[in-house]
Image (tube, rainbow, N blue to C red; front, side, top):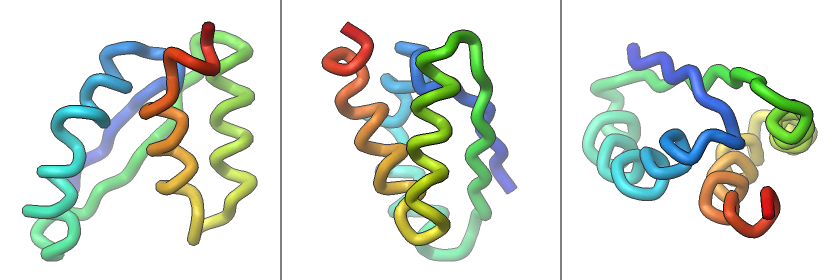
Length: 78
């Protein structure tokens, strides 16, 4: 099991999701070799609100919304 503690406003977390997560997902998570748990950490009000937004999508949409928030972090943080 891999447990990630990440903030939607952290540039390092966004970099991980942009560069490394897809490979991890494809080779380990999707094949069932690894269980992945994403835990949200809030350092500011923007990260908290982003986390609430991701959770509004429910279990089926959480990771899609989460990925979008990381991919577009520079645009919505400003």
